[in-house]
Length: 418
Image 1 (tube, helix red, strand yellow):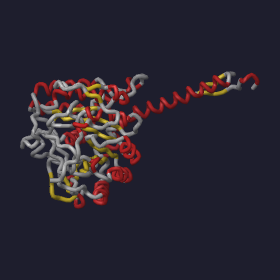
Image 2 (cartoon, one colour):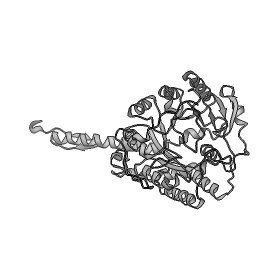
Image 3 (tube, helix red, strand yellow):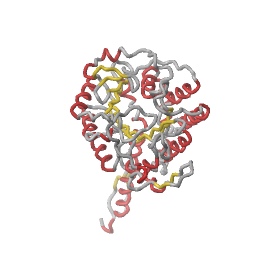
Image 4 (cartoon, one colour):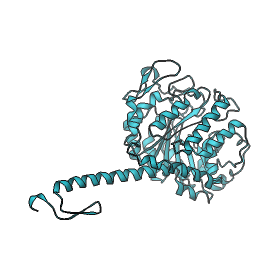
């Protein structure tokens, strides 16, 4: 129209009068930005509830099929943490063909989720193709790593392959003789996840060595909008882990604080049921539950052996396992009193007490939604370059490298085979 005016237009569902075209163009840009914001917001809210796979998990509450399998894609690891017995660098990587064969069998059993573990999964040369195959089979797929070998390129490849969840293990702010899984190494790499669709969470282990820095680990993760948890080291009746658990009173106070923060809606990445369970362990209290390891949740070793859990092994090959074999493990076990295999405890409590476990989890996650509506609620993962980490033991302050590599004195290479 003359004078640069247009006729009536409907913008964002509202009929606009005769507005200048330049204003209409500006309005359309604003509306597009608002639409994009709403889509991202809905996606963010959806992710808060997708981690539990509530609908899929519901199917497994009423049938005899397994919910989750943890597959050791390799026994090899580039670190040597004192509390860990789950690596053996004398063994070669399993072949991709073998891993695919085992995955098909695991899926045939009805398993919904696959957790790729190790060892260090990123040491396997075919890890990206393996993730892609998991997704082709229909698994909800996660991967646990220490993050040392993670690069921006590798993360992009894993995302393209379909990886949904990555768990990075971080025990301390700075290295110690017990563990080198620290924020000193990982902080710069968090920037890789700023625009990634892969859901990231951080998990640490609490023992006497890590306890002085566990609070800082938790705060560092949560302050960046990353779901974070720190959990008690596994029970160690055989003294295999070379670590002390730490003073009970201090551990109990820390767990109590995580329970309270979770109830407030903070991103404590574990269920309240597990936090209560860990507190009961510290108090020496009996917890009534039936272990479903080997049934609803099981492990497959890097040699293809069926394991009840990470601590209870069998010589039976996964290719020979039937649903009846799995169901036979639905029973109380002599080793379950004081069990520290928390994924097994979590799956058992979920199936045994779904309303209590899921109800509290849904409420806790719903409490996060109001903070998401705030313009300042976006995760601050991209602020890692400005973070300074101070070693409480008195060593120099350290800045994370923007390249995401450990400092020269902290580089860790794959140990030679024994």
